[in-house]
Length: 349
Ligand SMILES: NC(=O)c1ccc[n+]([C@@H]2O[C@H](COP(=O)([O-])OP(=O)(O)OC[C@H]3O[C@@H](n4cnc5c(N)ncnc54)[C@H](O)[C@@H]3O)[C@@H](O)[C@H]2O)c1
Image (cartoon, rainbow, N blue to C red; front, side, top):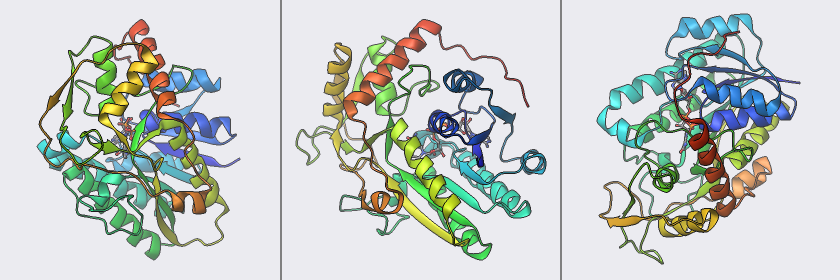
């Protein structure tokens, strides 16, 4: 079976993808520097798959550390999740985002070219579409009208990946995620945000656990049915399946030169107020919230066109929002029981 390098594999989406790939028989090798994750995520992966995970603590902005991994291992394909992802943090410190996200991708491409690895799946984002007037957002819409440095870093990385794929005979697929939610059904793996969460679901979970008083709903006067903003929430396990399909496609690809971008979403819009109700029915608890003003830069409605994922990858998200809320709550209860302290270190192989 193929050997897949997973950068950022201790993170939220990477760890779920690592579980699935391993369960499907792939050999996986994870690298991460834990800038936004913890070694405990790798132990949770190992517990679920009942196997040790090959891992090296590597900062992708350090080209020597990265090259050392390539010099000692042979990879058939790479999934590149590593990157910083907070929109608000990127507004406050754009250089941190450009340095980390763009340098990591440049170093990875250099190592790929040096060690003749040609297949890469890249974590892009629906934020590359920026201010589009029409929905659903389709892959052939113009990209780059971004509204924050995080989104711009993803846009620039897509441009770089496309240029390098075409000139250096690589085969690259950029997957544009919409809003990942949910957790592994075991309750052992999920998203562990640091500090006050930026995203809706982690925030709601902290309100439900009593760590935060209430949720702010940013805007109830959008032109949507209930006035709150609409997003396309996709279960993280469905996202992992999308990556599995992308890897399968790249590994079977006859052509060695290509670049493609594909949306991963459910293709269904869910409003903030609908999401609150789903959490309430999944947990049997009230989510206290107050209506706050609109947040600058927020779009009223965003959801994916899913035809391309279906045609090119045979991918369709299957898990419901209710399922995502149940899985998230199960994971939150696991965290409440086990505590959230940062663990020390994992063995490096
Ligand atoms: N979660 C979302 O809402 C979302 C939406 C669209 C796109 N994405 C993208 O998907 C990818 C994965 O997202 P996630 O939600 O799993 O994020 P995450 O923060 O949970 O995981 C990213 C991982 O990358 C690691 N990392 C970051 N910089 C690194 C570096 N220089 N060297 C080594 N490791 C590094 C972090 O420690 C973390 O474990 C990111 O690139 C993110 O931008 C996420």
